[in-house]
Image 1 (cartoon, one colour):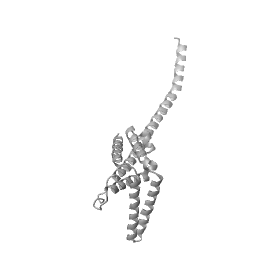
Image 2: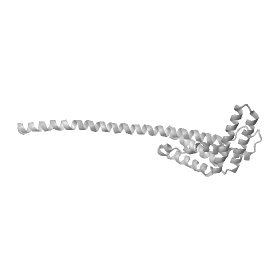
Image 3: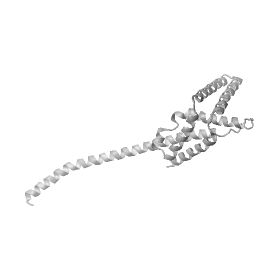
Image 4: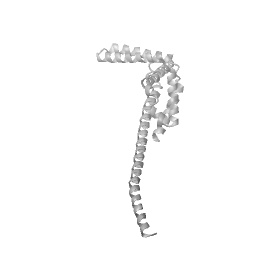
Length: 202
């Protein structure tokens, strides 16, 4: 190669380096930003999933407790039939308070198949027994609760007790009319809780 050609080659190499150097830096920075964005997305997804699982765990734990008889019922002479009615009413009350977000969208997006399938099955079971009459009864129950609290604030204990008795009648009637199967609901709640714990642990 002549000295002239060598000079031209050197100039071309210098020019190529001047062009490709900034381009390479820009590509590297772009790749870094994309990687950071992916890491940020994964972090938010984990946080959303964790929060959804914690909500589910709290809700279903409360429902599971509602499926057990209270220690005071037997000494009070509450029949087994009424005990089951109260457990059904208790489960429906928990669903009444949480049904709008009973199956969080974050859980469906990021949760495990095991927990998603079980919470959807539980939701379907409860929804099948949650009717318009259920809503009316539970809204009326809330009204008696508020009136009883007001009576306590006014110092009228007798009135408060009468209102609580009326509230209990509403719950008993609701549970008696419901066909919700407590013996089926209990193990399903346990399955949801176990799946949620496993998914939380990762």
